[in-house]
Image (cartoon, rainbow, N blue to C red; front, side, top):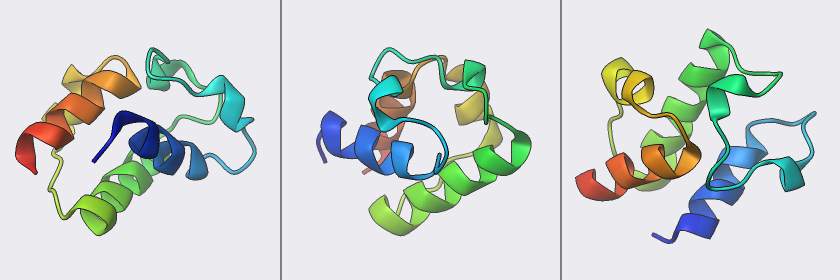
Length: 76
């Protein structure tokens, strides 16, 4: 699993957001379309794509997409 692949899959969840806005250092909770439903969508994507279970605490402790990537990578 590579960081850029993770960012691409993350960005795909934000259909109405320009994928160019989403980078490793993006603070995803500050994205205009971020919501609790979007968090569930990201958790489901991670489960489907990487077979990793991410918990709410993991999401809360992550600030950037790269932070979340490191958590997922550590569980692979």
